[in-house]
Amino acid sequence: SQTIHQWPATLVQPVGSPLSLECTVEGTSNPNLYWYRQAAGRGLQLLFYSVGIGQISSEVPQNLSASRPQDRQFILSSKKLLLSDSGFYLCAWKADREIGELFFGEGSRLTVL
Amino acid sequence: QKEVEQNSGPLSVPEGAIASLNCTYSDRGSQSFFWYRQYSGKSPELIMFIYSNGDKEDGRFTAQLNKASQYVSLLIRDSQPSDSATYLCAVKSGGTSYGKLTFGQGTILTVHP
Image (cartoon, rainbow over all chains, first blue to last red; front, side, top):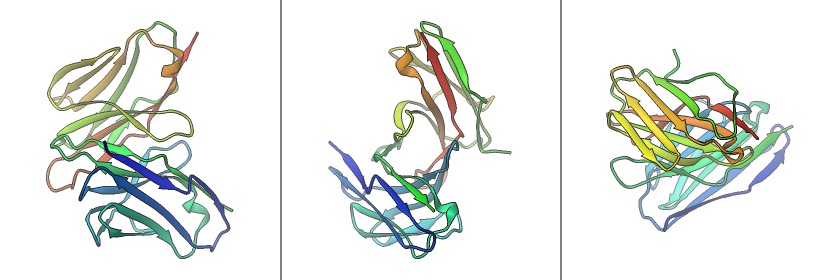
């Protein structure tokens, strides 16, 4: 069965520091992968998606970047964090069928101080 | 106009009652519709999806879709305190959207004993 993991689960970072969040998927190959962010009390905002290695599409201009160095690895990064980057970051993979439901990892809660 | 809009909460129902959660969407080309449940501090988990007009039942949950009215709902029968969570409506658009889902802002449901 397919599983998805994210880490770290929680982190507190100062403004201006770098960020790296990692996501890996097991049990499937060449999945579509997504990074969403959920601000406090808000819905999910799509940040990036990837349909394959090295292929990244950005949905909104921001202080973040994404990379997909391997088939089942998706990384979210920032060189210098802003206060507004705080939130709950969720990685997801899309089921390989027409319905295309998304399954989420456990999430990474980022607080920028 | 928001792409996916959910009825404003929070919604409070007594244990054993029917909880009704509503969602409207703006893109007429939308193909599939999803309901996720998110417990506080956790990642969203898929409850149901629906893609044809009408009702779809799964245990105590019933999803209803009306594409003409651009409306999708989730009914929870015999509500339990364990159903207390935020419910997210998500919509998959047609075309080359690479399977990305657009989420509503969520409705907080509280089931009180």
